[in-house]
Structures are given as structure tokens and as C-alpha cells.
Image 1 (tube, helix red, strand yellow):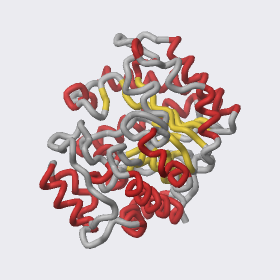
Image 2 (spheres, rainbow, N blue to C red):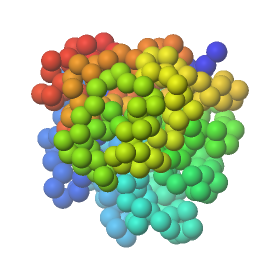
Image 3 (cartoon, rainbow, N blue to C red):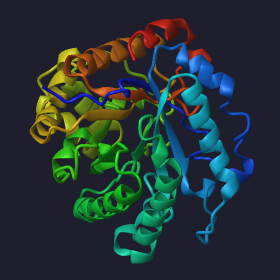
Length: 343
């Protein structure tokens, strides 16, 4: 039986507020407000995932930006008022971010940058460890290269040891490589204690959830594809349009149609790993780009929701608004209520 991540069953990401934006032109004061948190509570979720970038609370030299902490403080306060929990996700640290290979190339070989990552978590743990019943810590978003798995295991272990000195009872989320792919969870070492969560992201099949995505090299801006489709179609289309490497996570299921059963099969190995370690399993991101047909996207949500429910996996949809995936934006208004029922 998979251990539950209590209080973090159904959630929604607050992408684009305190992460993936520049502090000087971010709209921090208006993008998410107290009223948004009240609205999110009505969606039937029990938590939010809050991505933050290091620039919010540090300058380039590593000096503390105290004014940045106010936004995290406010969000936690608003969540507590509305009986919502919160995953505090470090989306970018000095020297590492998931979508800039050049910027991140040296991170796992640079002691100064890794020490700075640890020190940032020390400050966060000092400030937010007291909220251990309601706030969980996610160490770092989407390690990309599989060859960094051992370096990441080492650094994560160091961070957990330091956090535990200050926040012994806080849940800590750790994910694998390949952009936090579920197939990389087997690379993670045994959990350090009983308050560790194994974390993954799921945007499979990528050719559907990221159709027409401008940031994927080779993806045509006018490309559209329906759902459901077969896994073999996903692989063939990915190889034809983009790059065969994108298809690797699901190639062993090539004889299946994408469906609730497909997701159950895709999750099986990770569930077994989590059960063996007696560690909760959590999907910190999943969703469909706003270029997809809304009805097709709804069918995808229904299928992945069924698999989450089957195994008892906690999750947080990407994302509340904007960022090309916003479920509250006009694109998804025809099926919005049905999507809420399938988070």
C-alpha cells in the first residue's frame, strides 16, 4: 500500500508569480493576491505549490533581499487562513535552472554554488520550519541531466541534513533527473527519514501536452494532435517533428493506447519503489498546454486523474493561470468545471 502524503492530495501551482520572472518587472503585488487564494480554496484542493527563484530573496552576490520574503510570508498566511497547505518549491537556485543548460552546466562541480544552495535552504528552514504541519519543502525543481544523478544525490543529502537541524518535522520533497521524470526515481537513494517524499512531474505524452510549444526546438507553431492516441503514434510523431529522445520514457509501452490504464502502467515502477521505501509519492506538475483542444485536454485530465486516484498519489496541476497552461484562462473555460472535478 502506497503511503499517503497527507494534506497534499490535490493541489494547484502558482507558476509565474515568484518564479520565472524578473523581480524588477514581475507584478509580484498583483499576479497572485489574497483573493486568488480564496478562489483556489473553492476548487476543492487542499494545497498550492509555490515556485520561487533565488533572485526573489537574494541578489546576484548572495546578499539577502528581505523584501522578497514578504511574498512568501503573505502566501503562507493566506493559505493558513483558507485551510490550505503549501509546497515551497525552489524553482531556480544560483547557478542552476532547468531551462538554461549553459547557465547550469557547472553547478554540480562548483562547491561555491552548491554551498550557496545549502545556505539558502538554511535560511528558508529557519524561517518556515515552524510551519511544518502546513508547509513542505521541495529542494530543487527538475534536475535535467541523468549524468548528474549522483551529484544530485550527494547534494540533496547534504541539504536534508542541514534542514533537519532546523526543521526536523518538515516534509522534504526530492525528485530525480530527466526534468523530474518518474522513470528517474529509481536513481534516488533510500530516504533519509520518514518525512521524505519522492516527487515527479508528468507531461506524458509530451507530443500532446506540449503541442505547438514555442520553447521546444523543431515544434511547429501550428501543430495540433488529438487525444487519446496510441503510444506508438506519440513516439513516431515525436521522432518526425522534434527529437526521438523525448519519447524514451514511454517507449516500453508502445503497444498501448494512451488511457487511464496507460498512466497506471507508466506509474507502476515508481509506485513499487515508493512502497519498498515506505515513502509517499507526489506529482508536483502535470497539465496540458493551452494550444490543445479543450475537450481533448479534458480527456487527458480524466485519465491521469483516474491513475492518481487508483494509487493514491498526491499532485498539483500546472498551473493556476497564464504560463501557457493556465486552467483558469479563457481557453479552458468550456471545460473548466470538468477539469476541476478531475484534478
